[in-house]
Length: 94
Length: 142
Image (cartoon, rainbow over all chains, first blue to last red; front, side):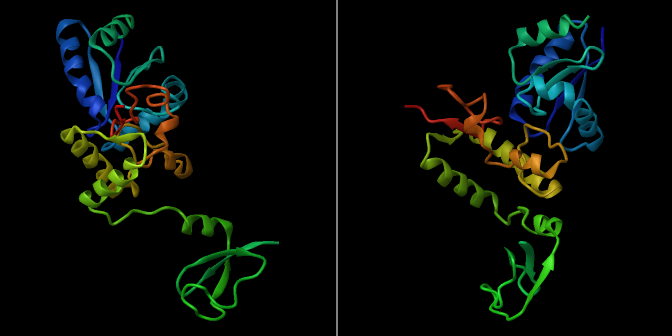
């Protein structure tokens, strides 16, 4: 399974809404996310910024949270989505 | 050629061929010095406010009341967003949206300052249940 990243922010309601989905996905499937908070950790923020050329075009031109990202393939899923959509995205990462 | 001038007493900025003889704000005579465009730009940048949470709440309520949108009625969500906005102002100088990361390009990041121009965004424009990026503002029900 690829290393997957979830860029999130502590005070972002969309991120908060997605956390139970991520917990469930990690429990039910062989999936693991690195959960990287970006507004209170400059190292994580700089990492997300380094991926801006591939993330922003797929997220309305912005660095939005939450963003789910596969650094190996540069595949991106951003925003608050259903559990099924997140699961399908994660499982296709291989 | 027009240049930037700054009153060394009160800090007012003037853009013109020559500075005013008397500063219109502090009324001091011959107080203007020429400054670079970079310094003028830095001086005119928005800066942090001294608003309390309740004052900011009142300000965005006033902003919304004349428009087609309203402040989100979910008070727990609003409080969480306020936590983020005020933390970002404390740490980075302005009330940046908690749901988007700043790029470190000051002018680019001005687009993230709350309230942003969300009526043009994909999460709001043309949507009956449209909302701003973070959900602080939602389209008012008809």
